[in-house]
Amino acid sequence: MPTINSIAAMKEEMTVWRRDLHAHPEIAFEEVRTSDIVAKKLAEWGIEVHRDIAKTGLVGVLRGRRDNGRAIGLRADMDALPMQEENDFPHRSTVDGKFHGCGHDGHTTMLLGAARYLAETRNFEGTVNFIFQPGEEGAGGGRVMIEEGLFDRFPCDEVYAMHNWPDLPAGSVGVAPGPMMAATATFDVRIAARGGHAAMPHMTVDPVVVAAHLITAFQSLVSRNADPIDSAVVSVTQVHAGTAYNVIPEDGVLRGTVRTFTPQMSTMVEQGMRRIAGGIGEALGATVTVDYRPGYPATVNHPRQSEIMADVAGRVVGTQNVVRDPSPVMGGEDFAYMLNERPGAYMFLGQAGGPSACSVHNPRYDFNDEILPIGASVFATLAEDRLSGSGDAA
Ligand code: NI
Image 1 (cartoon, helix red, strand yellow):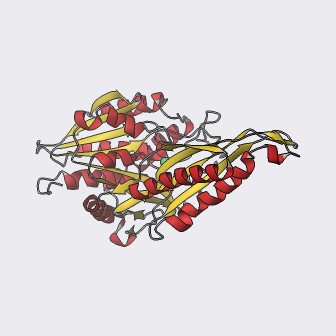
Image 2 (image 1 turned 180 degrees about the horizontal axis):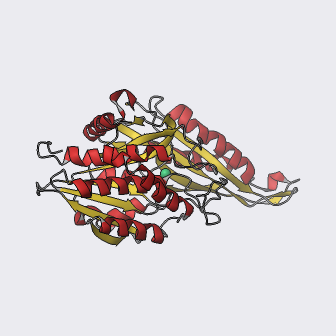
Image 3 (image 1 turned 135 degrees about the vertical axis):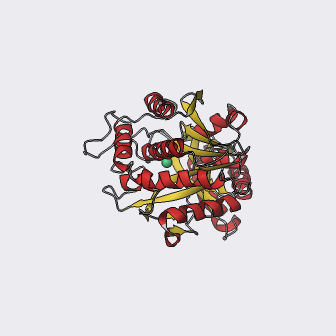
C-alpha cells in the first residue's frame, strides 16, 4: 500500500507496541501504564511532553523547521473496555474483565508512529500537537481535556482523528462532511401510581398499564414526529415494576437511550418524551417524570476539513479507496467535543479482512495490524499538508 515508506518500514515495531497495549488494557482514566509508555516514547524522539491533562491524558508538542504561527491537533484515544476478551492469541488481555475491544490500542499506536516519523523528518512548519486522550468509552475524556484548557494551552487551528472500521475493507477509508456519529442521551422515566390488590384494580392506578402506553407512545416520536430525512433512535431498554403475581405495584421505571444527529432532533425527542409522559400520566391518573440526560454531542465533520482529510487519505490509500459517503453511525464518540471547539474532521479507517473480522465491542474483536502504517501515514500527511509553507490557512 502506498503509505509513507519509512512508516511502512516501522510496521513490525508498531505491531509490537500495539500488541503490548492490547495485552495490558486500561479503562477510562486509569490509563497509567499506557500514558507512561506514550510519554516515554515521545520524549525519546525529542517531543515535548505535557502530562496529567484529564488525569491520564497527555499532549506531545512538536515544532517544525520554522514557526509559521499555525498548529494542528491529531488525536487518539487510549482506553479499553470493561469487558471480557474471548480471543486466545498470545497478545490477548492479561487483565480479567478489561479488553481493547474497540481498537484504541491501534489508534494510540498509529499516532505514535506518526509522531516518530514527524520528529525524525520535521518536514513541516508550525506546531503539531499529539493529543492522547483518556476515557473515550462513555467517560467523556475529550470533554474533560477541553475543560482543563486543552486548546488554550495547545492552540490548534484544526483537529483530526480516526477510528478503525470493521465495515470497510482494510486499505480504504470513509469520511464525509456533516454528522459521522450520533449524539447520545439516556433517560429515566418514573411512574408514581397507586398500588393495591391485583383483584381490585379499581382501587389502584396501575403503573404497568401506564408503562405500556408510554413505551408504545414513545415509538411514535421517531415514526410520526421526526423528519424522515433526518434520523433518530429511541430505545426503551429497561422496564421495571412489580414483585408479585397478585400485587399491582406502587410505581415503575423505564430507562433507555436516544441517538440523534442534529440539535433540533435531540430537542424534539426530549420535548416529545416530556409531553407524552405528562399527557399519559394525566390521562391515566399517574404522575410521570422524565429525567433526560444528554451525553456526547453528535460528531459533525466540518465541510472543508472533511474534504482535506479525504484528499490526504486519498494520497495514502488511492482516491478510489476513499468512500466519500459513508453511512453515519448511531454510536457516540467524544471527539465530538473537540469538533465543537475547532474545525476538523474524523474518518473511518477500514480494517476488515484481518484475522478477527468482527465488529468493535465484540469479545473476539482485534485491531488489524495491517492498517497501522495507513493510519499513521494519514496522520503524518495531514500534518505535513496542513503545516507546509505553501499550505493555506483554515
Ligand atoms: Ni472506539
